[in-house]
Image (cartoon, rainbow, N blue to C red; front, side, top):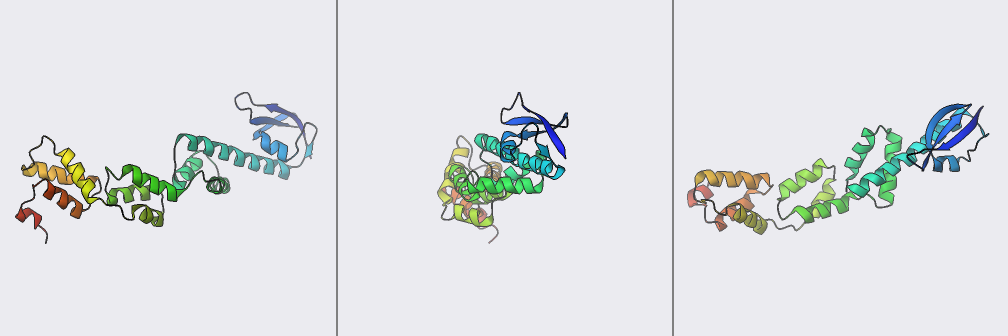
Length: 211
């Protein structure tokens, strides 16, 4: 058995303390873990209990980090998971933290997808929105729901009109540039074709290309 010989507050984080065992620094741990395990100077403690204190303390620290990150950004579950792994936390700690964040509603991929589409649909097409959400780890079901009923044709036309301002819309090189620009934004060909028609730059031969 070992003996806890000192517990001191950390100068840079009052929610954590330095734990000394048998006269030597053992580890930095959360005050919550110390409280939950009823640790005090003079307490006898075995190695397995010390390991559990460290594990519980890491859970508290990981959750605090997650809250700090979420307060600055709005991450998906995948993004937050990657951040936790980058900080060096193990699988059990990461899964615990993610479950706790989801339980309290701090991360919600379904709401993230809805909000992302709402904020970006005016300047990005369905294909690009879907690709970006998938890259962020959002499930297909949430993406499909967020994109459900989204009308892109008129938006594509508005984007095309804005892009073509002061441009020669009859110049083939410009038409190609505009098409690539709209494709990059994620618009499907049906929407691009409609936008080109609105701008009166699609002649019968070009419009029929590929049929």
